[in-house]
Length: 373
Image (tube, rainbow, N blue to C red; front, side, top):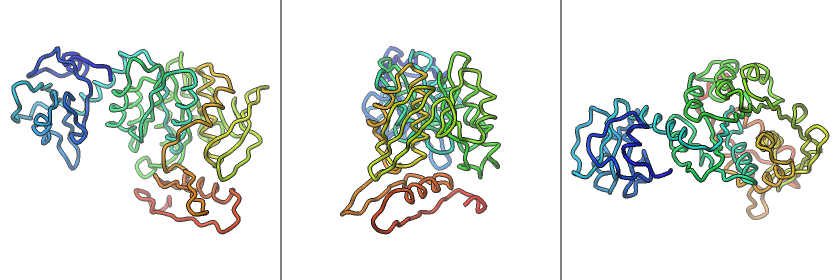
């Protein structure tokens, strides 16, 4: 985050300074008191099983510069401890992030979808890093609390941000898209993840499509050409539309070859061809990579630059990560699971050459209706 005076943070958050010097520069805003460092500003959020206001006084003792609290809080603090009062600390945190994002000149690529968000984010960030200074979502901080945190980690030195946007209830995508204000939107696919909250894939498509709708006429929307719901989502896009798919779209893949160390394929765009490699197996990973290539092309990179970014992409752990232990090869896809991602992982296991047995070790898929599993 760029250092901001306390008065600017209060203005961005829509709060009022109760105590403290408005000229004091804040270096970082945090919501987890366990990560607090002296000089940080602590936001006291409320959750189902916790209340951050219980940690305001410990945060003050640990050296925090101040805190954003709700008007009902009346704890004891040191004289030099800053307090910003709000009616709703979560809304204030989100408003702070949204207004901070408006103060930055960077271009934002926002990514959502039922599967492949994180891998697509990693590929996209690696491709765009060939030309730009890029900041991206770390881990999966992509929800109503995680996205503001991610936004506040960007600085004026960054040129492009690649941010994930997640959801599990209706209305979340539109609200988060408003915070991110994307210039480019990528929707990876419409699957069954979170169908227990949404009711149907049609409702999921409607929800994910809110991200396409959030992009202005000057922006770009990138969709999966192979997804059956792309047509309905595309109808909501106001900006330029790019379709990327294994067999259809503006950007396609051909001559795909998989091995235990990764995947080779040819990127096809009109009459242009470029050989590319991925440091991970899986046909679904090729699809994720094509979406990243489309983002690169939207920013003016050549196919060759895009390919160079793909092979160098540092992928997040436990997303079809290849490990070799004592001559046994493991495909670690343990981060999360839903029926679609499980099918993709099993297809990859079957497609890879193996001299011995293929063994699948499954964990439980929680938060799913019986009919979906």
